[in-house]
Figure 1 (cartoon, one colour):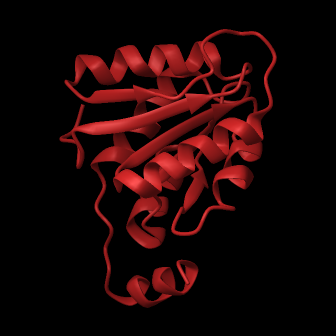
Figure 2 (cartoon, rainbow, N blue to C red):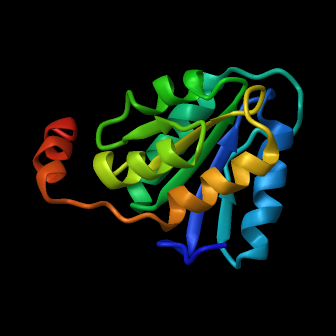
Amino acid sequence: MSKSLTKSIIIGSDHAGFLVKEKIKVFLKEANIKLLDIGTFSGERVDYPDYGKKLALAVKNKSIFGILVCGSGIGVSIAANRIKKIRAAVCYNKKSASLARKHNNANVLCLGARLIDFKNIKTIVNTFISTKFEKGRHLNRVKKLDK
């Protein structure tokens, strides 16, 4: 794993993302990253907007990264992006994770458990948490998102 920009991450999922979330937790704990798991805590059906919002509010208040997992990554990203100063990005490969951080200063990574194999998820997570925001020409654009 590349060097992480953070020592702590908030993680959450709905029922469709639960098993992948649990695997990500193991992967990150092996890298000595502290985790705050906001749920769900089983594969029993829940509503993704509840977990997207809960995680986004926690990330906003603690100014750290978050990771959300649902079936496609889309539902939780929509829910999270409703919270001011959250820039949640659905990433599906290393390049999208890199650009989400470099150009958009994304602070929440959203993943689709039903669309991405776990080997690629590990690469995406590693890329997201180890890539710096480039600022420069992107800074003014990101500031517009946070208004």
